Every structure is written in C-alpha cells, then in structure tokens.
Length: 102
Image 1 (cartoon, one colour):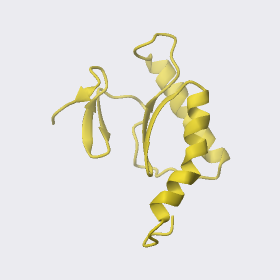
Image 2 (image 1 turned 90 degrees about the vertical axis):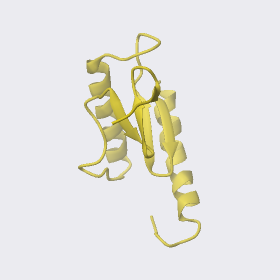
Image 3 (image 1 turned 135 degrees about the vertical axis):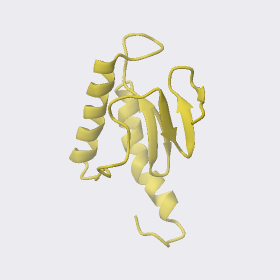
C-alpha cells in the first residue's frame, strides 16, 4: 500500500473487498477494517467452532492470501485460537462476544 497517498486506505479497502466476499461465500464470519481482519471459520454448530475447524479455517485463509500473492506478516495474527483476541485495538472475549480486560 502506498503510504502517504491520501486515497491509499480507500484503495486498499477496494482491493480487499473481493477477498472478504470470497471468505464469506465459503461460510466464514469476517470483520474487516482496512488491513485488519477478524473472523471465525465455517462451523457445524451455530455459535462456536471447534479447534479443528479453527485450524482448518486459518489454513484456508492463509492459502487464499498466498494464491492472491498477498503477504501476511509472520508475527502478527492469531491462528491457533484464543479466548481473548486483540482486534482493532480492543481485546475481544471470543466466547462471550464482548470486550475483555487484561
């Protein structure tokens, strides 16, 4: 992304829109904000996914980004699942779907 260009965030959002749509078509629940993404994999149960579904979903997301020649930062992101997820500057309790502390 060309940093400093006034329309860079707008353009990046437009580039990522088809990626988000593709993941949603596959059943992922996705939240996107510029270059930050949060989400959950497709599940059999309506509320929460198993560890296996989460790992498989993370692999599918990484594969999609690789196919599109988009690089994911190697140390950013949570791929193995967590109860308290950092997202857009907040900590989200992934079980209760609300903000958490610490």
